[in-house]
Structure formats: C-alpha cells, structure tokens
Image (cartoon, rainbow, N blue to C red):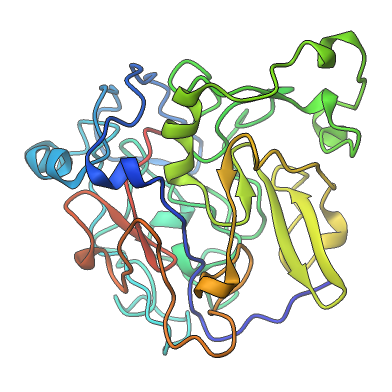
Length: 316
C-alpha cells in the first residue's frame, strides 16, 4: 500500500556507539571490492584499508579523502538535508550538491550525484528509495549495482559490496520461510542446512555493519515499513519495482534484527525506515549515539549526512 511522503525530512540512522566513540569498526581488513557499476563514476582509487569509524581517524585521513584514494574515507562533502524544504532542485539545502558529490569507495552513484535521477522531487539521500551513497537506483530499494546482494548467502546489505570478507556477516535467504529470495534464485528450502546456521552473528559483523544500517532494518536488507494497515517487512532486493509507493512489488522477509540490525524507537523521536519526519509531538529527530545533521558540513570530516544523521563512509 503506498505511503504518503511528508515534507522531505530524512530517515534517521541509529548508531553503534562504538563506531562513533572511536572504537575499531571490526578489526577485519576490508575487501577491495569497489562495487562499481555502469552507472558509477570513478572518483579515485578504491583500494580498501582497515580503519576505525571514529571522527579522529576520519580527520587524520582528510588528505586522502579529497582524492577518494581510501575506500573507507571517501570524500563526502556537499550533502545536505533540510526538513523545511522540499526535495527538488540541486541547491545544497535540498540534497547533495552536484559540484560536491558523495562517493562510495571512490565511485559516484545515483544516490550521491546531486541529481533527482528518478524525477520524484527527492534528491539523493533524502529520497526514501536511497539506502545510502552506495546505491545506483533512486527509483527502487534495489541498489542497482550489477550482482550486488544477489547471493543466497547475504552479507552486510548496506556496505556497498557483496563480499563477506570485510564484514563477517552471513544470512542464507533460503532459510527464510517468507521466501524473500524468490526473485534472485534463492527460494526457501529450509532443511538441515538451515539447522546448522549459528543463532547469533559474529560480534565482528555486528560492529562493522550496524553503523551503516537505517533504523528499522536488519543487517541483511529486511526492513520494517509502517503502513496505514500496520507494519510490513520487506526485502530491499526484492526486484526493480519494489519501492515505497509500490510495496506490493516487495517480497516479505523475516527480520534478523535481534542478531544484527538497528531497531527504531519512535518514542525517542527516531524516524523509522521509509518515513520522512519524526512522530507527532517531536520537534526534532534524534540520532542516539551519533550526531544529527542538515548538511555534511555538520558531520565529522569524511562522514556524510544521510537522512538526518551523520554516517561514516562505507567501504564500497
């Protein structure tokens, strides 16, 4: 059922406190998968390095961020969101500035290029269909990157690549009785393979991935969306027509948020995934464990403003 979009106020992210407090993100060397697609514009070298997600580390990496030479410290200047202004135009108060795009691991995609690619009046990271700068499709919840998240064994959905080597996350779509992988060749099978899946994700996965996850989503792309008839759970990689205005085209999924993910708490004035403003009675949104923002300039160096909260640059 379509959801009416309110004024272009962004989705808020919930943070892993360790990520912004200066603790190492995972301690695992990140892969060099740039996630580059035919729609991406190379912004620099995409060789990854093992870093922390702290602003102190981001500050020390500023000299390399301008050239995009470090996939975990890609330049992310010019992004902006203003809850009082609509999402049309390329002004820095309504979306990303085309002159200062937000990159993903050294490449520029549709959700970071400063353009309203799908013509819906919402630019880049204020577009509800954009799940971050590593997203080359503003018209659907799919990332639009060839081969991205097409594996039956899903890793961190929001890090801009399909490799498990940098995050240690794994969830088999074939073990979900809701059958979210029906359209990607990963139909539900169940059986002994699913019985052997560990009950909890490795702590490395949780620390690495949750810092990129929007509130209301698990680490594997299963997100709760509020509708007039109640909440529904959708798999973001359901298909090219799965969008906020066409939830019927989205496959259902079983949330793994208890193992890895970011719950949304409306009572704390958080904006849940798929919404554009805080709940009634909230003057402003909150970002527990992180900073609120209206523009990337409000965030630590190399972080970017993603739908009202400061996020660290994903490796891509």
